[in-house]
Amino acid sequence: MSESGDGGDAILNVGVDLGTSRSSVSASNGERHVVRSYVGWPADMVARKVLQRDVLIGDDALENRIMLDLHRPLERGLIKEGSEKDAEAVRELLSHLISLVNNDDARVRAVVGVPAEALRVNRQQLRNAMSGLIDQLMIVSEPFAVAYGLEALLHALVIDIGAGTTDFCVMNGRYPTEEDQRTLTQAGDSVDEQLNQLVAARYPEANFSSHMVREWKEKHSFVGEPKGSVEVEAPVRGVPTQLDITDEMRQACESLLPPVTEMMIDLISRVQPEYQAKVRQNVLLSGGSGLIRGLGAALQEALKEIGGGQVRVVKDPIYVGSDGGLALATDAPDSDWEKLSA
Ligand SMILES: Nc1ncnc2c1ncn2[C@@H]1O[C@H](COP(=O)(O)OP(=O)(O)OP(=O)(O)O)[C@@H](O)[C@H]1O
Ligand SMILES: [Mg+2]
Image 1 (cartoon, rainbow, N blue to C red):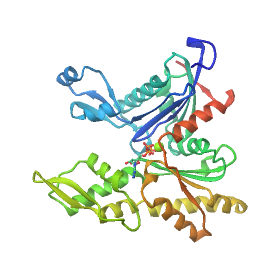
Image 2: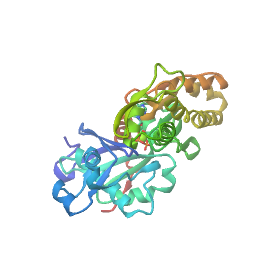
Image 3: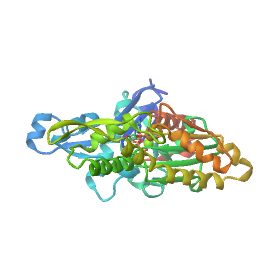
C-alpha cells in the first residue's frame, strides 16, 4: 500500500538495519525481510552456467559459495574500504533489500542504521551506495535505531552486540551525540575467531570450518557456569568424532565480558549524576550476540559494582533495528532528511 497518490508519486518509508551478518528491512507497507549480508558473483563461466544468475544474495549466496566470489562487505561493521567489489556488494545488498519491500515503484525514504563509529567515517560511502536507489536518506547509529524502536528514549542505555561490532548508546530524551555513543570491535565475530583457535589448539587433527564454529556457538553459547557439557561433531581424519568444547565455548564467550562491562560502566559514569540510577535500571541488551546465555545476567551482576541495576535482554532482536528505523522514518520531519541525487 502506498502512502499517497499512486505509482511513482507515492512515498514509502523504510527502515534498514545494515548488519555485518544479517541485514533487515521494515517498510510502511507492512513488508519485513531479513537477509544474510553476503553477496557473491559466479567465479567463472562454468559457475555462471550452473547458477544462471549474475549475482547471488543472502542464503542463496552462502549455499552456493563454492561457485562464487563471495563477499561479506560489512566485516567489522564498516563498509570495507579500498575494495571496489565490497562497495559494489553493499550496493547490491541495499538494492535487494529495497526491492524486497518496494513493490509499487514508490519513491523511497530510508533510515539506515549503521554502527556508531561508522557514522564518522563511512557516511559518504553509504550515500554513494544509496544514490539512485532512494530519494531521501537518514543515517543513524544502529543502537539509536534500536532504542527508538523499543521506545527507550529517556534514561536508557542500549547495548547492541552484533557480529562485527558492539554498539552502545545512552538515551537522554533527544538525538544522541557522539559522546553518547561508542563502538567496540569485540562482538560475535571475535567470539567465533577465538572459539576457532581454541578448538583447533585442543583438537589439532579435527577438521571444521568457520561456518561450523558459528553454528556451534549459536546453539551452545554461554558465560558463567555450564548447564552441561558442550559436545559437537567434526571429522578427525575423516572419522566423525565427538568433541567436548565446553571450556573453549565458555572462554570464547566470556572474552566479551571485560570490554563490554568496562564500556558500560564508563558510559553510565558520564551520565549526569542525578540520572545515573535511572539509566542503570534501564540497560537493554540487543543484537544476536546479546542472546549468549547468561550474558545479560553477568552484565547485571557487574552493575552491582556501581550500585546495581537491571539489564533486560531483547528476546527477538532480528527486526528491532529496522523497525526502529521505520518508526524514525515515519516520525521524522522533512528537515531531518537529506536528499540524494539520482
Ligand atoms: N543464540 C545465539 N547465541 C550466541 N550468538 C548468537 C546467537 N544467535 C546469533 N548469534 C550471533 O549474533 C551475531 C549476529 O547478530 P546480529 O544479527 O545482531 O548482528 P549484525 O547486525 O549482523 O552485526 P552488526 O550489528 O555487528 O553489524 C552473529 O555473530 C551470530 O553468530
Ligand atoms: Mg546489528
